Length: 249
Image (tube, rainbow, N blue to C red; front, side, top):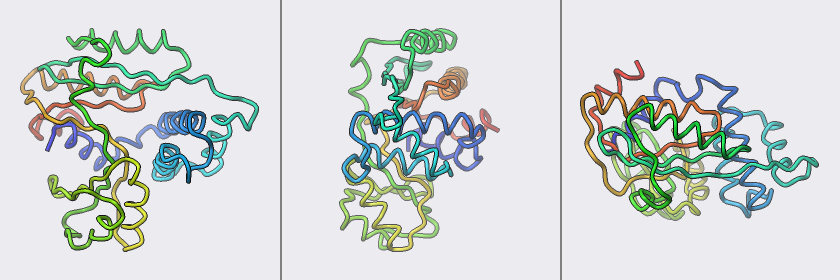
């Protein structure tokens, strides 16, 4: 189990992901806008949009806000958004590989801010492709392993899931990104309560980070995640859970 997976799980339990709802809604709206702009406004024919809408619903984003974001992306509102998607790659303390997904209307501003965050935390940005090869994209549905067993998730396999993995008391149902929506629907149709469902970028391998490097790395990730233009941060670190707990306590 990677440290970043534990990091995300702890934040979820503590409610940190929704602590600043206004900022969260802004980030979710940008993701919807870009998905609708690039793939059209019909979620049935645009899996990326379908996933972005579901994430917004999971965060209790109002239906009207979601529709406005779709309309802005497609230009139906007469106000098409000039939002650009940028991926930054670099290395953090302890040699951890980091991918930063950003959605911005000002590339120069966002690039300067991300570069400054890396520099302040003894880290460095790399060239495109320098760490992307370490990661792969997957659809992941998470359920409570204390309530459900693999037998309860058979419908997910029938819907296109490729694997079920135990992960610190949770069960992670793995699929291709394109199959995520069907897997989620199948589980919900079987009355399985879902903790989260998302297309995630996960590392193929991890590096162990300890001591002062661990705290510096987590501080860097928090700084990046707090930035208005940053939508996701991915890293391949493995850090003892007690350090993760202490950082966000």
